[in-house]
Image 1 (cartoon, rainbow, N blue to C red):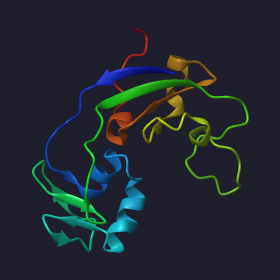
Image 2: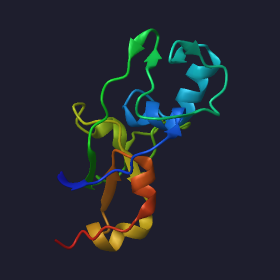
Image 3: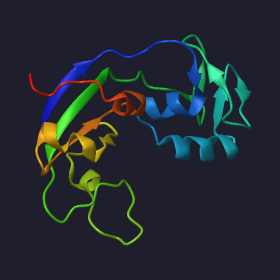
Image 4: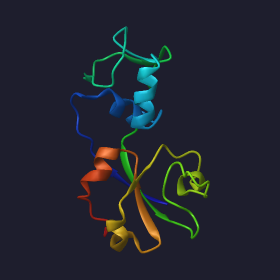
Length: 141
């Protein structure tokens, strides 16, 4: 697996994005955690995911502070035949994410439009969804 570094954009962000970026869960799971009353910001338990927070916010999940997010990174991965590219498959098929090394952070697949950059059997992945969706990098280096 090959990685590439990238810079992240700073500033106020939605709480679900921050939780996902910390590697704790997906944005969808973060919204569920908020609905369950597991997330607080500056001592206030959240009841809605429609909250934007800045860098100085004291965010806690189950009373524990968030880990620091990793820097944004990209990976190239040769996807073995027979694996599907999804985090949860309703049909129970084996997934790429289950096959990846466990020490990797939560990764997001970058769309199939990048097959030409990483090869037909390859896939690109990032540890930050907003960066993965921008699609402005060049894998040719």
